Structure formats: C-alpha cells, structure tokens
Length: 144
Ligand code: AMP
Picture (cartoon, rainbow, N blue to C red):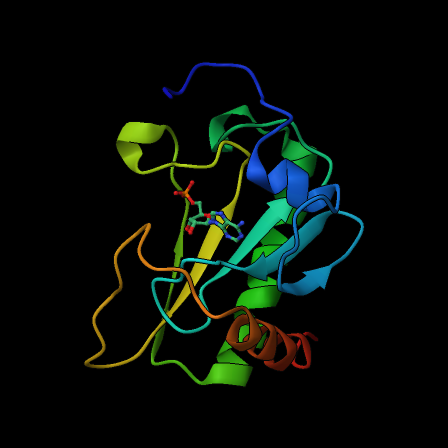
C-alpha cells in the first residue's frame, strides 16, 4: 500500500470504531477514540484515531479533524505519563507501507519508554487482553 489509494471501510480501525471488533478503550470524545495497541512495542503503547475520518494517512487529513486529533494525543499522552510514569514518550505516525504503516486509517502511536528498556518490534507479539484492559483503566483514570 503506497501513499495513494482509497479508504477501505473494512480496515481494522474502522471495524473497531463501528464496534465490530473489540478494543481496550482508553478514551473517547466527539472527535477521537483511543485504545491500547494489541501488539505493543512497550507497556502502555496506545493509539489515538479520528472518529469521523476517511483519511488513510496524515497527508490526507482535513485540518478541522487533525487539530482535535493532536489535542487528543496530547491529552492521552499526559494521562499515560501520570499513570505509568515513563522516562520518555515516543509519539509517532507512519504514512505508507514503506514507512511502516500497516493499518490505513490515520492513527497516532503513543509509546512510553523507560531507561534501559529496549523498544519492542513493530508488529511483534500480541498482548494479553486482560493486561491491556488493566492498563487502559489506569490510563483512563488519569485523563484530565
Ligand atoms: P501502523 O503500523 O503504524 O499502521 O500501526 C498499526 C498499529 O495497529 C500496529 O502497532 C498494530 O500493532 C496495531 N493493531 C493492529 N490491529 C490491532 C487491533 N485489532 N487492536 C489494536 N491494535 C491493533
């Protein structure tokens, strides 16, 4: 999948937004939905996606959707900081398969990092669902 293409309504994040596939929800408002990455690169790896969007990537997104998306990312990142007390936080976003994108509904990764703990592989192993739910609750409790 290159940068060009049409939005696929059957992508996994569209299914999550429609409630067809479960997710460990962290936060939701009228603009964004946030949930735990099921194949986390670190403890607390969280995704934030726009709810009302058919943008496949950052370049395609409308400004009026991008702005609340990035505000949502900051809000969730602050909650992760408070809840999990990481030493650092990566905020990343990939556009096109050669850049590492695997799901073609715009999304932003928030990946907490700790001193001396290596970053897990992108597309690595699946996390335990109950652990993801517990992390989601801890982060959700700290949304300001
Ligand atoms: P990207 O590779 O930037 O497109 O990111 C897609 C992310 O979605 C990856 O980090 C995957 O681990 C994650 N992912 C894929 N399927 C699911 C799912 N069903 N629930 C939660 N996260 C998912």
